[in-house]
Every structure is written in structure tokens, then in C-alpha cells.
Image (cartoon, one colour):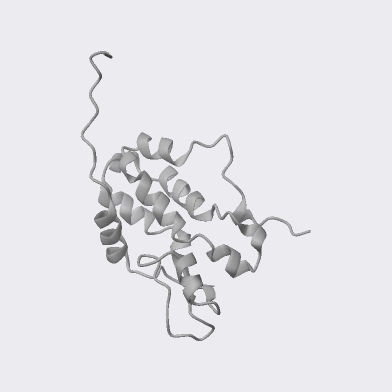
Length: 160
């Protein structure tokens, strides 16, 4: 029997969920983008470890929540600051090629890992020293895919 890897463990049930942390910092509008970002890496850990029990992979979400917990309250609500912070998460250094020594690189900002894996059955996942994109490119991608920030909610005057 294989032990579960720490990367495959779900977040502690006592921890606030991603939406709670985001809303607390004024970033509730980031939720769908961050969920999409995490899903782009789904399947990578299973291939890297060659361990089906590593699914589901919670590491991207855990990395994001850790980054949010360390996020300076003075920068709450500042989208550029959050994009730069998310850009430092370790999971963004996950990489893959079409095969060992291959020339076709996976770009998680173009396609999901699972889509890449379907196209390249001999794929080779590995860790890069740096994320696939530079900070400015990561920030621009995140801000370009961010839904518009909704206006501040106003209290309802009553229900009809």
C-alpha cells in the first residue's frame, strides 16, 4: 500500500476555504480565475510521481492559500499586488515536455496539463527552477483573465 503524498492531502477542514480568504482581503472576484489556474495543473503530480493515489492534487490550492495568508493587509484589494504574489507560488514551476529531451513544452497558460498529456502520451513532467513565464507575463495573464471587480454591495432594502 502506498502512502499518500503530502501534496495530495486535502486542506485541513478547520482552515477557511479559498473564497473566505479572498473575500476577507477584498479579492472575491479572483475566485474563478484561481480555481481555473489550479485546474490547469491537474494531472501533473500524478504523472510526475507516477502515482495515481496523488489525485486529487491539492498542492496548487494550498500554495495559493499560503500566499494569501502571508499577503500584506495594507495591499488588500490591489489586484496587481495579488497577481505578483500568486506568481511566486511553487506550483507554477511545474513543467512538461512532449517526451524526455523533447522540444515541445507545455504552457499551462495556453492549455491544461491533461490536454497536453492527451496530445503527448510520452510526456515528461519535471520541475523548472523558475515558473514558465516571467513575473510580468504571469501578472499580465492573470489580470487579463480576471473578471471585472463587482461594485461594492449595498444593503438590500427588503425582500418582495
